[in-house]
Length: 150
Image 1 (cartoon, rainbow, N blue to C red):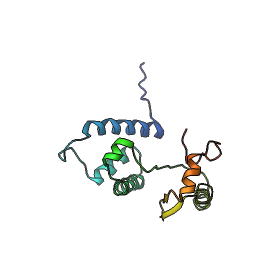
Image 2 (image 1 turned 90 degrees about the vertical axis):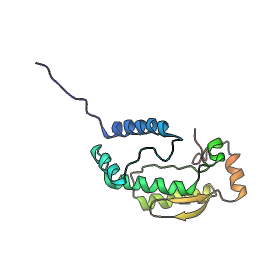
Image 3 (image 1 turned 180 degrees about the vertical axis):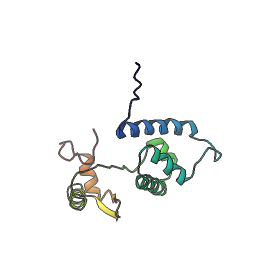
Image 4 (image 1 turned 30 degrees about the vertical axis):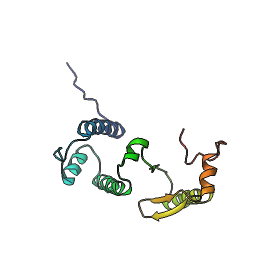
């Protein structure tokens, strides 16, 4: 008796594999002309559904991508220095309204940032005044790690 069992992938593994495959595919077509292959949003939704990704998540990702393109063009400075904006996302298992108010308070009061735009999906912040930028730059205490990466 030979038992044939397929290895089943969990959603996190599916996401990781698809993300890596998409990165590899994007490198192949990087710098390609407008003739590079394309698919419609409806086909993308169907492909994602086959991988177990809900349509609403795919639509939101497409919206995020289009809004990011308008926010920061791929200029020489972007290619040389990297993106000027940082996008941070974190899933929190608490009520979103209270969590968002708390986070916005931290960004405003402790980090000295200024709210530029607020929508249901997220918010866009400016660096604030020059004193706040200097304070964040010269903060070596490790107490304000909200805007720093390690």
